Length: 308
Image (cartoon, rainbow, N blue to C red; front, side, top):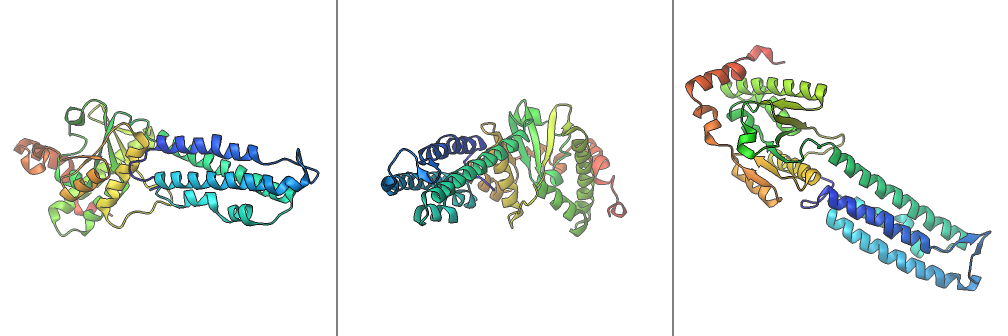
């Protein structure tokens, strides 16, 4: 996860904008100008004093900015970019006025570009979730396996108007795994049926950009972006992806829907809402007619031989 839990994309963007538009720009404006190898506007003997003033300001600026970035970003390399090899050369190296000026101006310009690109990356992350600006529920694997079809549950009535549903990528993989690895024939068949339903959902997302169930509930799959490294524990991964979503859409709330006490505790510790689906939506609590309809629609529709 790029950001620390509790930090939103908007907060991180504000921090990066302040760093690029004020901090780094102010530093660049303070660097003495060089014309033809000479220091403009000051005797050459005052060069060392001017450099010391600029270096002191640059050192304090990068230290404060690195501290702020460490508080906002889980990835420590974001803050480390401010004080790398070129920083050490600027602060401790011995250069002629023109070489030193070129070095610090190059570094400051590259830093501005780097952090502007990072802010734009966070803006693109926010733009991925424009359909989740009211409230979103994140489902775990058991929600899909042990409750009635997710496209039949009245999400708007349960969680309020504007509710959308998000299914993390790891949940798809867990459903796929259970469809052929588990020894429980009933669970295996149901997992295959759920996976077939998820494939239909993905096809609709691919065609329309999102899926809609019950006529009014948007359903998305939170796919792993290229290079994403999952956490070793799948429950932790689901909560982490819910947190990632929360950072992108805040202040809209994200609720992790799970019957697992451990996962609910993880969600609450990361500042997320957590809730259990009503028992009446569990498969074993459905009426005989509802259960038959549900099983015909999902459990027995896909045979053992039908899964590759």
